[in-house]
Image (cartoon, rainbow, N blue to C red):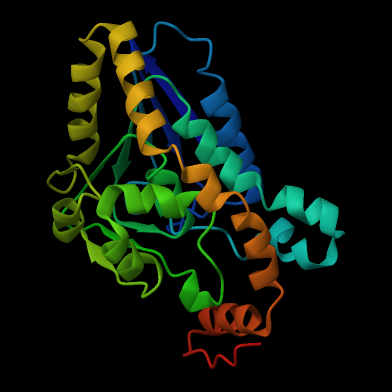
Length: 262
């Protein structure tokens, strides 16, 4: 887990991931490691809050399309590909299931899979210069990892369509107004603002905090598995399409895509 740093201070844990490049993308290996980190908190009764951060310049620019394991997906057997495509969903589910309060501290851009990860946490705090962007449909793909019901819970169906279907880029001020963010701190102070929320949680009765969080999530997410149970299969279907090949190629070549519906 060389890309992940974990620090602990009393009832608060901070997890930072950094791939060493400004894009800070989510490779399959990194997602497996982030899943393991989230699950490592399962038996920690003393924990009240977990802060998740990316890099200081960008939180995360999404799923790593250049990763060797990602590029090999079309060539591996379907049964193995289906398992590989569930890695992101398992990561997000593991972070959602942490019983302590979870807070994403977002600097810079938060894109695609980075948004999917951030909305699986309880709260999100960003800098004024931050932007959230879900470009999957623009790449010929679907938005998966269980993120559609989570985003819809936060901002409602019409705004979710603007974010996911129309791929509108949402600045921090607008994202806070919509409910996609829970706070905007000045540039350079995002992690301190997240820490202040974590300290508030750490000062509360830990069992009551966990029970109330669990109750809220149970109500808000009651139908979420029905909405997203097959989104990884939808991704496999979309990923095999000519439109996905064109969308990804256009992105990598920095040109406008030409979609055909094939």
